[in-house]
Image (cartoon, rainbow, N blue to C red; front, side, top):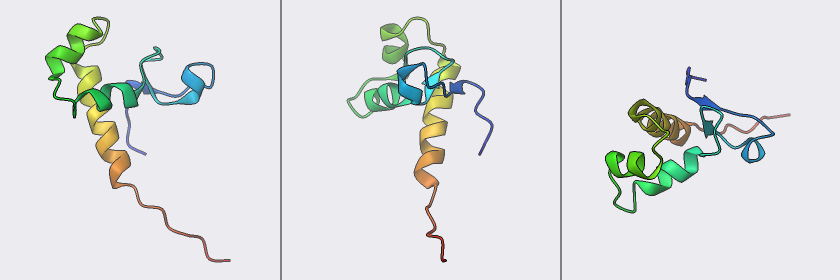
Length: 75
């Protein structure tokens, strides 16, 4: 796994979904905002406690996850 310092996983926060810096803002929430036409600046205005680097790393994380490939185990 690549090093994503701003993406955290905690079973006590949002059920363990990937979040931004341990806050209750999931990667999916931010990534889902972009296809609706929101700009990074609009996302930051909606979540003023996020930083631009948070959003950029979130998009990088989503792109990295999209590139993953599952390989079935042969027994």
